Length: 290
Image 1 (cartoon, rainbow, N blue to C red):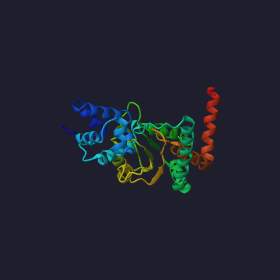
Image 2: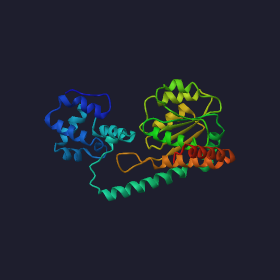
Image 3: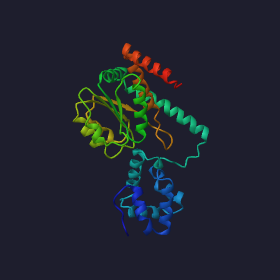
Image 4: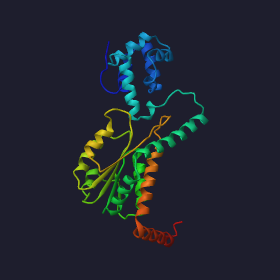
């Protein structure tokens, strides 16, 4: 029997497909349709879902290189927690109204849980550093880049020198070489993180800037969060909750944190911040932009 013993469990299934027996192929196709389900089903439940025997499930997971079904389920659960939306799609028959209310409730809970662990003093300390910094660098990849741009746009109304990375047409190295003493770097590390993030954290640690890490809370022991903190050694560590009842992470707490940080920076900017806002409004009038 051919065994596939490397890669994620989905990669193992795809690699094994050409050599599977008909019943095993039916099981594989069932899992590939809803790859997150194996994380919550028992072997018997999965066998019933695919209309195969328990023995087929046992042969199948061994063919993938796992010792038993529990080991395969553990691998599936780890992949699910890492963040790919396809692994979080379920066969739940929950109605749309109930699903909507669950999303709203979870977003509210994420905000409350996140700010129960983030103090106003921490936010104000970072806001003051942003106001004093010669330049603020905000870094975000994939989904996190949307929050990096949002935070950059909001803070940019108050301080003149804000750069969001990565920049189009430039490598990270070309940008990082410009980070100077007194600068502040705000790094988003939200699931799913890109492979180069740990190396980026190491390089940022070598710069003279002070760093803030905004990351999502994860229940996985020894997960990426601790790795990034160890590599970056940030002065500010702000953890938000992104738990969701559906396949996509709920980022309500991330956006709220960005909003509160920008608001506190504005409130603490004093006359200098108001003067800049007035100058921007004068330009809006001059350009007839609104």
